[in-house]
Image 1 (cartoon, helix red, strand yellow):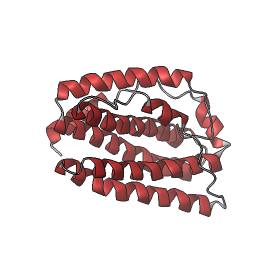
Image 2 (cartoon, one colour):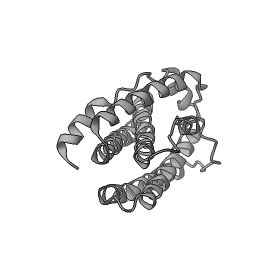
Image 3 (cartoon, rainbow, N blue to C red):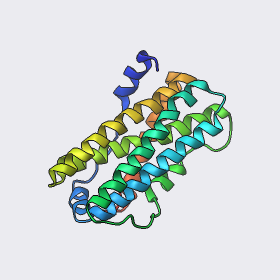
Image 4 (cartoon, rainbow, N blue to C red):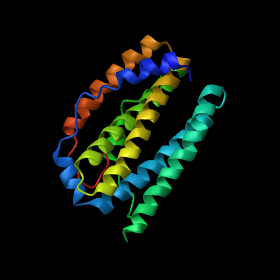
Length: 204
């Protein structure tokens, strides 16, 4: 990716609403549930990247950029599974993802392909941005030193993925359009977060 794109992309993360500090305390008493939900988040991220590659297979930069992300996300899924096993815990049932389902309502599904592509990439960027923020909270707020480091590594990875999706959007779409639409996504996500129940058994 062009560094002039990525440098600008990294400067506009800007989530409007921070996670309620109580979430980490709730998560700490639900580690098995948090790890289970985290595992499914990584699995869904890999599948979503595969879907984007299949849908936009005529966009070489996108295919080249996302192919290794599929491998990385699946590797993360396996890492979380290993952590569950190490702790004598089980991968529980996949739960309905209220956060992602609410985000999907904002994704453009009709109209020009450019708008649909832009929203698909910003949808993924938003999930990575919020995941990064949540992992940061876990890395700073959990009492378990090992889990602090565990989530610090995931935080750094999610930040890189967020930047990548913004960069891909700017590769195919005018930067001003990307920036304007990203601001709309940030506003929508902030309002949405205010209406979602704080749950300690979910990453989002």
